[in-house]
Image 1 (cartoon, rainbow, N blue to C red):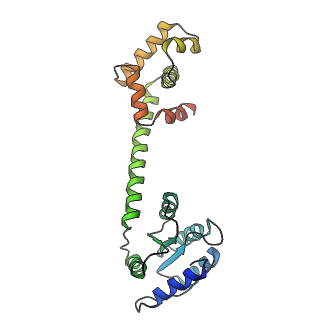
Image 2: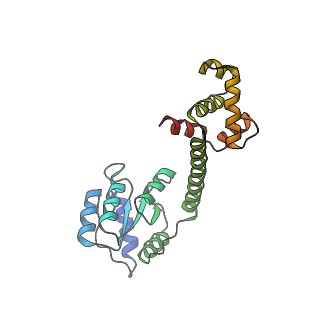
Image 3: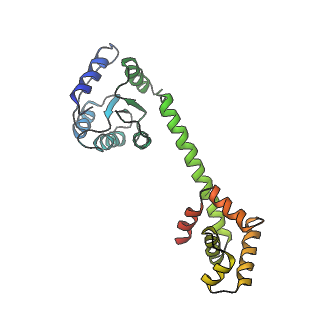
Length: 221
């Protein structure tokens, strides 16, 4: 399913040239692709990401995946940016092909999808691993922030965020309109609860987890 006739013809030629594959429909728009898929119920759909608009292919694939659970979707595009790749897999695609893929790569992808044995290319696998590491890091940051939000009082959280802003104890005393000794008492309590030796250690820990902004958002709610 592609909105550019040149690519449609190329894909059809490659797929039709294999005796094991039957092309049951060709579409030039997302809605047409959905209509054909619902009528023909193919085993595999090769779908362009960008059809009549930037989201048409993704939206059509999402509709097909939701209604026809057995259909395997392979997204095809000239783009290989991270967001496009992740969007494709997020909606249920099993593979991702660039439009300049070699004929043998196209055939292999379609047959693998049919057998439910799709494996991402090295480039896509690298992107997925990178995203996994990023998500894992976000998960650890969230755990750290939730722990802080759970054990500290609201006043302590406010003081901690001021420390993250680079404020001194005297500045915090002025901003919070409290005695310097009270600020020191709160910081001592923060250190004890978080098992840290100094306020700079806490700030470094938050920044190493990239969690200071996340903490602000959590505290805000």
